[in-house]
Image (cartoon, rainbow over all chains, first blue to last red; front, side):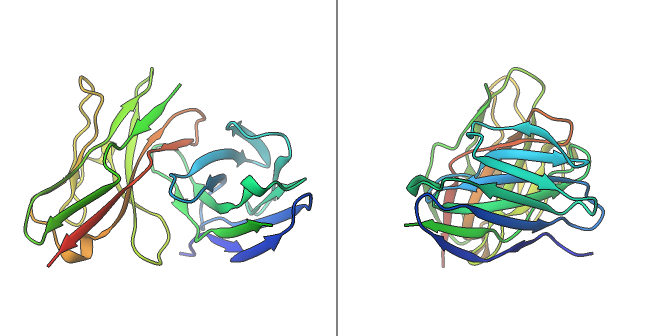
Length: 112
Length: 110
């Protein structure tokens, strides 16, 4: 069984730039959720994708967008980067509730 | 609105002592609760699901709807239990949307 993978591991961008983060879901999982984890905080839900459609969104502005592909992998796109976007971005895959979600190692984004 | 509160940011115990990590929640529906753990340099991983009523690595957690709590307990802590622990509540979509607490860093001293 293959676990959740994310790329890249680290990324440095400057304010105003755009970034794309990638995630491959665990084998057998059809749902991908994205979370932002600021330093010293618990992860915060950004949005979830199921069958290539957004299936729930947290309190994040529209410049945070995503995609899910037919193989269930997913991308998180952030436009017009701000300093506060610096965080660890976590991807989690799942099947039906309430089996829980399974997390990738994260992508550390630094915005300068 | 749903919220998860972990009142202790840091918790230190000695090896062999009992440990309890506190978690309180607010949620208007029927909650599904989890404990996740993050060991040093490792990814966040699922430790317990309340619906399973299981014991993992000696840890148990009971959902108390009256007190809106889901405390994590272990009778005899081990050094390898040292980690960051997050309590999380699942609400929202059919496939889950986790709301996390701030986390508790558990340190078990030899």
